[in-house]
Length: 348
Ligand code: DP6
Image 1 (tube, rainbow, N blue to C red):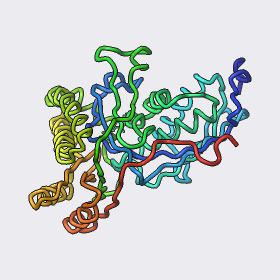
Image 2 (cartoon, helix red, strand yellow):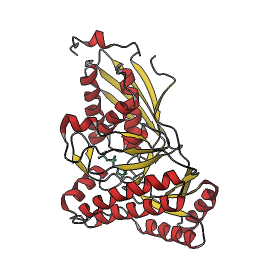
Image 3 (cartoon, helix red, strand yellow):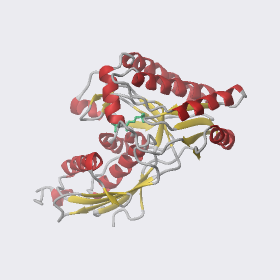
């Protein structure tokens, strides 16, 4: 591969090998719809909680001799769309660093890929942190968030731990200027001790990718614009409820925002339906818990699995209730987790 003239100058001494860990995040105010597909600029702001479970660990080994990239996901060669997205992401990093080198990328997910369990969020957040270090880019957290966004929108939130808001950026803006204004940052939270019970009713890959589904929704669903408008109000109310440590209001807003997002998909042409019969059974159970006085609220992403927001002290009981409702359902309890970071192996 031809050496870029700036290559030597840009080497910042971090070394060609870097390993990063990132955790998935679950949106309480959803990101659904882009206004710029290439730059991954969203239509609306979104807000999420980063989990302390199901991390992705990604190692990037930049090789000055390599003419192309080699990518493995959970030990198997990546192919198709997954491979194309990783290479496109590394192209961005090569552009910015001036280092044209290929890389060997090895990524290990502890969560089922493509099952609506936010594997692309942890995946691209870890890749952004590891690739930036490997190619000698000195980026602060905001710049890392903007970079991760280019791989997968939701990944920009996993750069941060706890709760994070992703700013869509100015309404009308596209292009390089808008790119600068669309990143995540931490959200202040009051006295809240939340847990998310991740209820897996089906770990299989989704039939329609979230990327394709959100495109179809924006272009064909008559419910999309009304949801986008109401989501803006939801976000304002959510920030206030988080600050007040009001789990009931936080949960209520999260549940209505998610159901609204799924309504936009159901109205798309043709319809996108991720919710399965088992999903609705879990929703009924969550409603039952609330009727019995336990604050528990559901949110669903691009798949049939449900995440139930509740108090940490109620989480085991909520998990048990959900498992009881659906035969074969498995649960994991998550609490707010850390942001993406380099781990041992970085810089060697
Ligand atoms: C339903 O971030 O996976 O989980 O930007 O096209 O890669 P791309 O989409 P992605 O979409 C996530 C959608 C969601 C809601 C959310 O996480 O906010």
